[in-house]
Length: 128
Image (cartoon, rainbow, N blue to C red):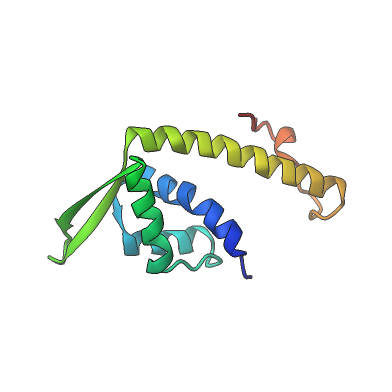
């Protein structure tokens, strides 16, 4: 499945912040984690990830430091800041609203698989 560039771009920052919320990481590991989390549907490259990381760093949402990896190789590790955690919380609420809205409209238009229930029926609140 090909995911549109617009959707990938819109989801990049919250994905990176969510990954870093689990702990410090470096570029290749972030790319690998995105692939794992998406079931192989998202194929990020260095050229896509690093501009996102640099933008998040400029905004104060992540901090970077150089350190040696277990293999002795120098890597640039990124960590989420408090401002980044707050931004991620806001982004999460916004994405939940978008997700719930799409699910509702797809449910109404019968474009959703049998047995699916909207978030509102699963006890998940998606408000901003």
